[in-house]
Length: 354
Ligand SMILES: Cc1ncc(COP(=O)(O)O)c(C=O)c1O
Image 1 (cartoon, rainbow, N blue to C red):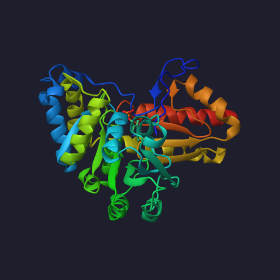
Image 2 (image 1 turned 90 degrees about the horizontal axis):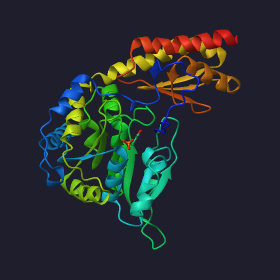
Image 3 (image 1 turned 60 degrees about the horizontal axis):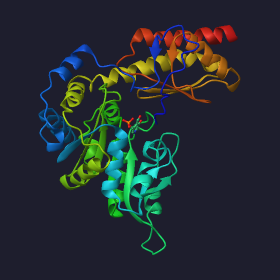
Image 4 (image 1 turned 180 degrees about the horizontal axis):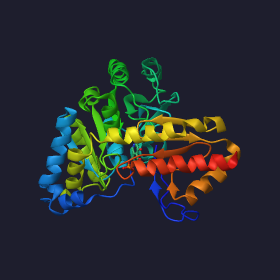
């Protein structure tokens, strides 16, 4: 889930010292900007942009898929993918907390008349193969035709294991469904599991791979899949106004990210763990902390939530300050010093409150 506020409320902040709202807030490094400036480009609507083509081929190969297609965003990639598998009135099954269901503006219904069927999940985003089987509709004039299972990984930072994804996908296939995976943070899951993304992608028809989350590119998602699915998605991308021209400048940033920023995702996971460990003693003050890959879900006692947010902002710490649970996300532009500043700020707040 990503509901990043468009403009941070800095009213209480002297200056920003750590921005942990999302892994989407990263700024391109000088080396990435060089790669963008020097990219060889062409008209991608004519399929003539060599850098876009290289990026698409690269990610397709990494995922073990036949083809890739560059999109401006994860939302657009997911939308084209779902609609490549669902005609009007067709149904897709999806976890109840999924980004596609909740945070993509209902696009699959608005633009494709595809019918989502939410499956209940636990707090880690899990649901079971039997939930999939039970949700598939019997052929009957009253029912929509179920054609797709749409998965996500990570789910709010929670890794769905390869074995689990494989078992969900094989049940979906037995039921005649296609499988799409919203892999906005699939690289985080793969790095955490010590596997390549192909270990996951092999079980799915299509996968959205975001470059603008933990990988730190400014823009872009590549949808990978079999030739037929990608051909349908290509047409849908055009419908959505997503055909872009000399977009190799953006693809160059994405290629740079794939070359340099995949393995280092482990650093983000360790750094989130460092914050989690640093906050652990505050459990005595009723602070609940859940660490999932590069995310921390922090629930303070309700009585101090507002004061804590004001204190953290005054210390220059940006996070997604939902209530009751706040979200902190580590990324390329968060270092150990900033992580320690977060720990110290929490500790000072609870020391004063005691
Ligand atoms: C899990 C997940 N899927 C998809 C998206 C959509 O990506 P975009 O913001 O590029 O449209 C996001 C965005 O944060 C996300 O968190």
